[in-house]
Length: 241
Ligand code: IPE
Ligand code: IPE
Ligand code: MG
Image: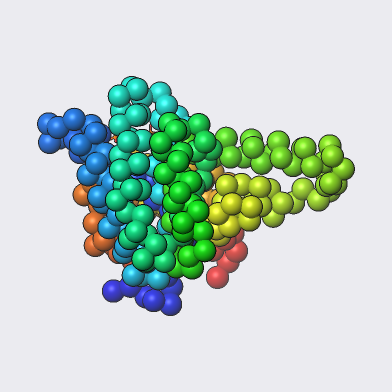
């Protein structure tokens, strides 16, 4: 049973294992990505039901461009399809969508449908669904450093004012974009035990949970198990009890 008093405000998920799921079933990788998209929809609905404020999913990394053109463009096509079929549902459920990462370099139809979604959901007040797309933690930090350097050069900021909060503000999760708190919980499916360039700055004190299942098999029940695991942990933040 989940403790409603100890619900994480922000849960982030590395949706990994679509390819291996497909391989085990002897089907093309894109069938795996499609199944992953279905799993994602259920987790969005369930997050809303659980009263989570922010759900962030890692959908495409700055390193995923290394994959075949066929796989990359297939993933973006699935994204466009999902946005088109689910936009109404997102609006009805009061979900606000934000993108983490520079999505403007994606194929034109993907950029268009994302922009339509951002605009149509921007005033919603329920769950905030952050999609990390063409996202990399190092890229994000590099952009933040550039922006701060520019502000200093323009005389709008003193070097002494570069605080941790000032850096956080410049990130994709910062006040100028998603305005999300650091995730209390990060889940990575498929048994891989690494962050793969996800939320490097924001994960400083996140609790990490690594369910063995491949992402397409990640159900709301698995999600609740991961949250229960988080709730059983003692968070110390460097202090002592
Ligand atoms: C995660 O599944 C989805 C993306 C990276 C887009 P993978 O495609 O990485 O699946 P595996 O790791 O090869 O099983
Ligand atoms: C991380 O998974 C990126 C996403 C889930 C979108 P990868 O499958 O790309 O990570 P590595 O290559 O196993 O580290
Ligand atoms: Mg993978």
